[in-house]
Length: 91
Image (cartoon, rainbow, N blue to C red; front, side, top):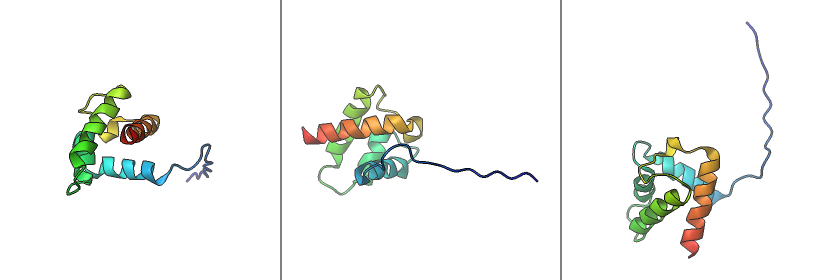
């Protein structure tokens, strides 16, 4: 039996809690399109529909269809999506 040792080193800063929450919410309902998954993660909140609309707009801004699922995005695309969602929320 051969063995290997792997060392991982972080090359970028740790993502903020809002980014971690986005990824968690996105994968919470994996088989749903991303806007629906984010809305379901916030169901019961008054702004759940606005979250869904911002997700549709943010996906379009980063070059993805509203039917995109979480597993279809790369880590870099999740970061771009997060930045766009933050920008839309602030507007």
